[in-house]
Image 1 (cartoon, rainbow, N blue to C red):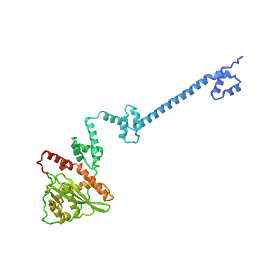
Image 2: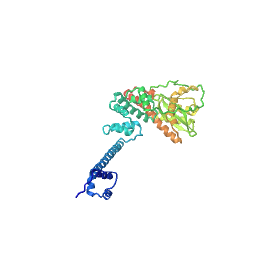
Image 3: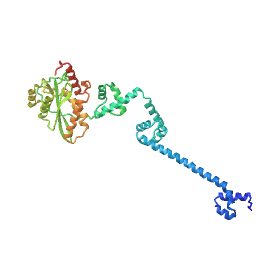
Image 4: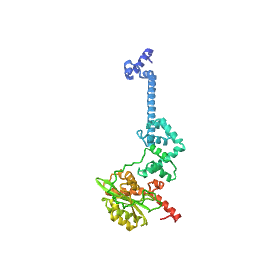
Length: 386
C-alpha cells in the first residue's frame, strides 16, 4: 500500500533536491521510495535539463556566428591581398575590386577604411568624367616618359615628348599632373667649368659671332673641353657638336687636357660625318685649340677655324649649355669609382641626348630626329644642299 505524504513534506523534499542534496541521500534520510522521489523531482529535472540545453544551444549559435565572421574576414583578406596597415589607395583599390562580392562595410572595417572614404572613391571610379579619364591616361604616359628619361625630364620636355606622340596637351596641365604624381626632374647643378689659359692673338677670327642657327648639317661645328672629378682625380671630356641639329658628332675622355685630345676628337667627327667640305669649326681660345698642331690639322682637312672673343664664354654658348645639361642630368647625379664607369655613363648619356632628348632649337625633336627629318625632305627636294 502506497504511503501518503503531505504537500509540505513533498515541497520540502523537492527543495532539498533543488538545493543540491543528492537523490540517494534523500531516499536514505527520509525513507522515501525511489520511484516516488523521481516522480516528485521529474518536472524540476526536466525544467533544469531544458534550461541547460537552451544555454548550450545559445552558446553554439554564438560560436557559429563568430566562426562565420572569422571565416568571412579570412576570405576578405585573402581576396584583397592587403592588410589594414597598407597604403590607403591600395586598400581602396582592393575593396573596389571585390565590390559586390563581400559586404562593403565589413571590408572597410577589416581594412580600417572609413566607409565614406570608400564611397567617395567608388563614385569616382564609377562616374569619372571624360577629363578625369583623360588625366588618368596622361599620368600613365607622363610616368613612362619620366622613367625613360631616368627622371631627368621636367614638365616642359615631357610635354614636348607627348606632343610628338600626337597627344596635344599644355605644359601647364603636365606640370599640374606631375605635382599630383609628386614627381619632378632630378638634376644637380653643374660644378665650375674648367677655365684654360686663353690665347689673346688678335689674328684669331670669330666667323660665327653668336649666329648659332644653321640651315644645313656640317656648316658649323663647335667644340670645347670640360673637366669631371672622380675620387680626387680629374678627367677631361672633349666634344664636337654640329650647330644644325645640336648633335654630338664626336667625343673623347682622357686624363690629360692636351692638344692630342682635341685633335683626335676632331678627326673622329670628320670621319663620322663623311669628310665634309667647307666646315667652320668654332671653339674658345684655349691653348689646345690654338696650338700649331691643331691649326695645321684643320688646314689639312679643309676646315676653317673660328674662335670666341677673348674671355667671352657666350660666344660658344651651345657647348657651354650642353656641358651644363650633361652634368646636371648625368655626371653630377652619379658617384663613379673609376674612369671605366665614367666612360660607360657618358656613352649612355650621349645615346640618350642624340636619340631621345627633345631640343627646343629643333622644335623639340632630338638631334637625330631633326636630322632624319632633314634628309627625308632632301630626298623629296634634291636642291637642298648636303
